[in-house]
Amino acid sequence: MIELIIEVNEYEGKNILKVAAYLHAKFEYIHPFADGNGRVGRTLTNYYLMIHDYPPLIVYDEDKILYYECLQQYDETEEINPLYNFFKYETEKTWEKTLLLASGIKQKRKGLSGHTTLR
Image (cartoon, helix red, strand yellow):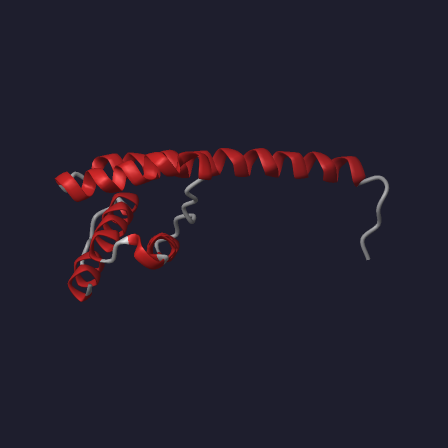
């Protein structure tokens, strides 16, 4: 585990999301899911993303089968691109949902602006 942390910390490239996918895949390989390590691994991944000014990654329930398949593929082949592409997809999905939510909030505020006074 220490070797993995050193390897990730020494990375000087620009593709932070790909490194996050690699960190996650390696962590899950070292510490399989037996006792909640999926959540620990995703928390570690999100910490890495956030300290590099990236938003946290959400693995949506409807995408968990694909998530597990990508991890399994990494375990079998050490090919990171499927998990990396999955991370890109989930990040885009999160942004789309966030923007839709923000748009709805903005519309509600606009509708309330004439009826409320903030003090």
